[in-house]
Length: 157
Image 1 (cartoon, helix red, strand yellow):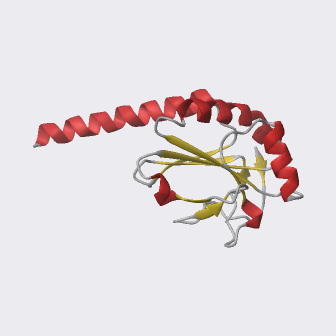
Image 2: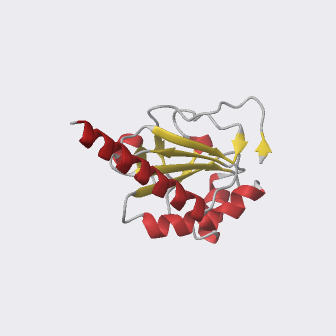
Image 3: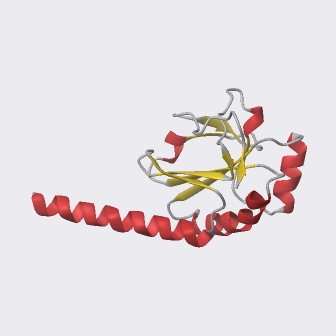
C-alpha cells in the first residue's frame, strides 16, 4: 500500500463525476446496484496489479447487479490516463479525478475501493489491492447477511 499525506479519506456524499467519455455518474443513477468505486493512479504498482481483476469482475457482473467506476488520480495528463485505460483493456468507466468540476477528495492510500450497497449506503472501504475473488466473496456474504436479516424480520411479523 502506498501512503499519501494530507489527503481526505472519503469521497463526497452524494458524488457526481464525469468519465472520460463525457458521461456523468452519480450514486443515485445506480439505485438497485452494487457500486464499486476504485481510486487508483498510473504510477501505483498495487493499482496496476488489481486492474485485470476489476476488469474481469466487471465484465462478469455488469449485466447482473454491479457497476464499477475507476477514478484516476495523480496522473500527468488526461491523455496518459485514456491511453493507459486502452492498453489495460479497461471496460468500466474511468473518471479523471483531478479534472472534475468539483474537486474530489482523495483517499489516504492507493488503491482504495469504496463499495456501496444497492440502496446507496456505503458498505465497505477497502484500502489496498482487491481481487475478483474478494469482491465476489464480499457480495456473496452481503447477500447471505441480507437473506438472514429478511428471514429474521419475516419471523417477527
